[in-house]
Image (cartoon, rainbow, N blue to C red; front, side, top):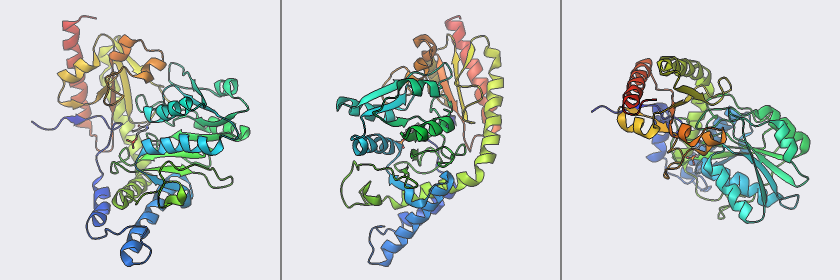
Length: 386
Ligand SMILES: *Cc1c(COP(=O)(O)O)cnc(C)c1O
């Protein structure tokens, strides 16, 4: 049996072959420790790490020195939330975030809450958006940090980062964004968006797993961040540990490719995504779009097919790889907190699926997927009529 058609790019992406090529020397002969300053093995590794730092910074309009290498966006989020909260708690202990954040953002907030920090989780509207008025309403003199994701991983909804950034800058509140899904897919400029911290990951942008970055602003005002990992004082003392040189080279290369090809990818992929949506129209009136109709990532299509259990549809279609509204929080079988925060009922949430496309998706796959999905849904309608 051939492999299923992959429509789960928001869960992870395959390695771009060009990224693999860039990494190979650092998995073979160039095995040096980037912190070894006394010999050529170390110099070669360090040079590769610094080139990757430039490549990642260029994609964000940041300075290379503002990029901190981590093990992935989960670590970047933990460092951003816990690290800045600890470093700034003399100013206040209030943090604002919103309901559709990734667990890797909400869980560290809960850890702080247990330590006496006050966490406000803003509700979202039916498209998954928050507003400046909501921030205004909940801010206190003790608010030190606002963390709002750039793009939602389940629906692709894009938050109004520019407005939030301007507001935070005016209020002198630190602004962090989990940009794991937006990084490399849409333009992100830390200056234009007034971002102080930003999290991203290698494996969502055709780079390797187990490597990520935290953008940590240094100018014009330096944002302090307490380390979570203590050791050799690597990465400006913010994140100790021997650097994952091949992983970092891969993330740098993936960022460079994204910078050059993002526009073309976005145009092609959004056309395929819209073609898929069009081909699913026969499922009306059972069909509903989840997420903002326009303010959305180019690759993401989250839909509810009323009366069709998403898990059952997945089981019925082993030829397709996608995810359902009930398994989005990885290992545990919970209903999506994202769709529920957007006002979907548990029933609608169970009947939701996420189709996420990417660089290697081709039109034939979309046509096949549309045929299989409509056929699969019709079959389930017969068993359980709408
Ligand atoms: C995938 C993802 C993460 C976690 O990233 P890892 O690098 O796998 O730890 C965090 N936030 C969002 C929005 C994601 O999509």
